[in-house]
Image (cartoon, rainbow, N blue to C red):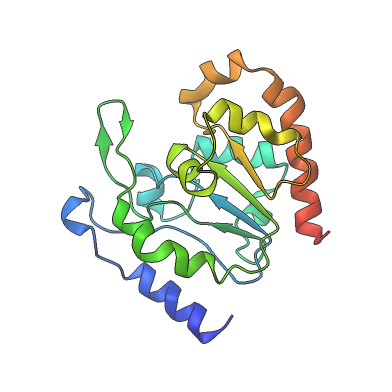
Length: 194
């Protein structure tokens, strides 16, 4: 890893830009390495992730790893998988779930970090804020997820793997029946560098 990349990660982990808005204080949670082949672009860490400092260290993470068809060892290897949320810190609780990611985070860090992830072959987008950033032309989450059939797309949208999305999964059985096997094939291909 280059000195510039290491310095950028150190600066991100030391960031206190939004501290006055964060109920539990700043604790940036992400993983990245210049050789990562897959980028997981998500929303922001939840409370449990904030407490452990490990991305997707919850029920959502287990489901996400199942959907991707990869082990924890592969998922948590930054040389293979970069996990870069729109907001690196837990934003706090809102009326119906967690608050949105703090906008200052993406504006300050996202372009600098993503521009250094030159080996990414597949971007997996999770959540509406990541969808708006990576696929701004998407009309809706469902339409973006349904675009999995485009085998040449370098960006794939997923519903959030949270148990809160079980109703969406029940309404769209094609996702786990058809889209997930194709997603797993794309993940294997990206990890193999093909």
